[in-house]
Image (cartoon, rainbow, N blue to C red; front, top):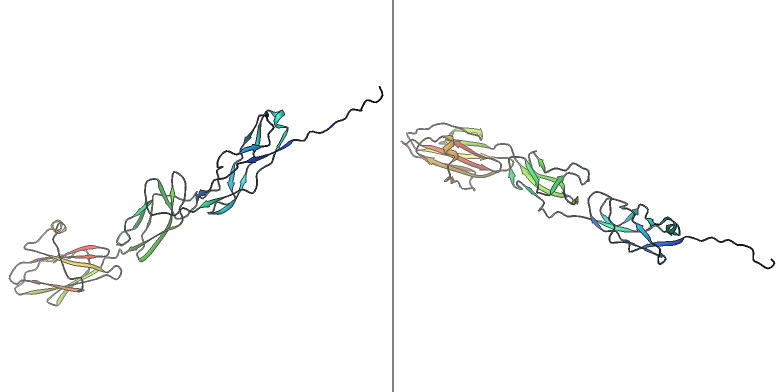
Length: 287
């Protein structure tokens, strides 16, 4: 037959699909690059009646450090459904996404310290329940319940980080100050201006009986934490060390006088107990 058209062919091009509503959540610093999609992204351009679904890619931050508008990378998003239907589409992968990693600043409620004043033991920082401490802010660093410093110093500092053990969030650097003085102070007792008894204060024991009035001069020094107070107690009989430790009504000498003195009445057996409270030690002498 004449006049019939010859057979022809044509290509069917896959339809372009894009992703709408795609967002990534900001997060607080946790030392990791992992990110999280915010909400439910959807496909745009699917022909009515075609059952094509979106399988989300996995987002990651380009850097794990805190900062604003950090680039986000995804593993591939893919189309899911009947193979013949899915073959009619081509998905454009998302690009240009950013999100922020925010700093977490400790409010000091996540941990406690044994003292910020003078101490004669180690300085200890203890994490409260649900938190951990480290000297680095690395997610896979060494995290522990306690950190400590032991070296003697009058102006020590310790810098550390706090991690929430549930969320993994890590704080910015925290600094605490401490003062350690482990060296026992030096004390001296003089009778009538002579016969000095000098020692690194732990305990001195000697019984005394006098036939005349005696003045006991007391002095003490500490090069680091200094002298906090000097106290004494008068008893009418010799006490045991346990009884001395139990005394509650010590008499405090004037703090303004570095050398304190007290009077022992003649012709009477006297037992003087000197207590000197220092910045780093509470020492007693039995006189």
